[in-house]
Length: 155
Image (cartoon, rainbow, N blue to C red):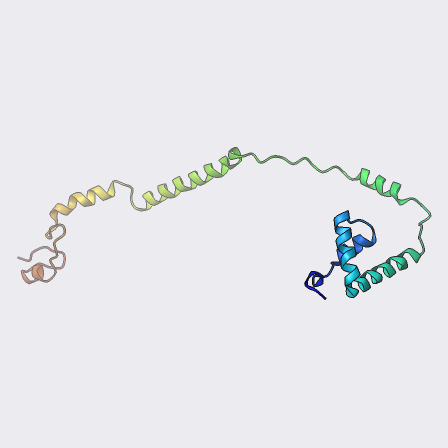
């Protein structure tokens, strides 16, 4: 077998060739391959035998036309509801308002737990009376001079 015939014809192409559904160029290509490839020719013969077997099967009839019954049932089915378009940014408005309210409530509760914003300036104003200057470290030296643990000097 030469290199041109190493790629075999697919089952879809063989079936389409058997049913005469290929265009002229594909039909010539398949016929050329079948003339040189006994494997694909045998598969085509199997497809032809299978098609002949299907043709020999008896045709069944139901005695009534089911198309009218099925069409009646399909008409009785309620039509699908029309799809409501997404509301866009207006649909997200309640979500945004809820998120903003949650954040505002969280900030208000946090401020209430910390004693409000007025507690911090009072504590800062009272720091001028500390014995240790801001940023100064007075661990052992202050206690050696007679300061107690609060920083007040012992007399």
